[in-house]
Length: 88
Image: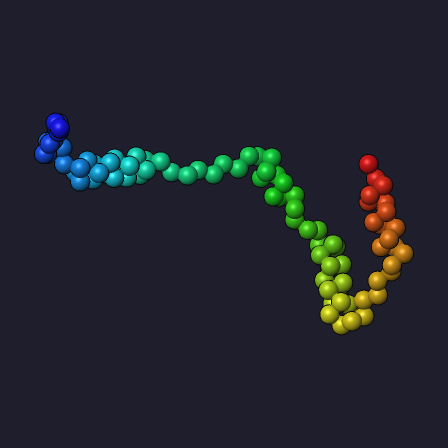
């Protein structure tokens, strides 16, 4: 039986692995994550501000719920649900 390439082949596998690690670190340093927000998305962020009147109404409803004085009108709630799903 004949065995070829017996012994060291002149390349140190540890150095080769170390070079791969160094190369991958060098390339990853140059790359950076970027986040770009479109102008349309920026406009949507600005338009989500709640008007003062609506904020006051929300605060009043929160207070009623916390005090236990909020009364739910089931007919109006059902009508709103039906109107929402029938609207196309």
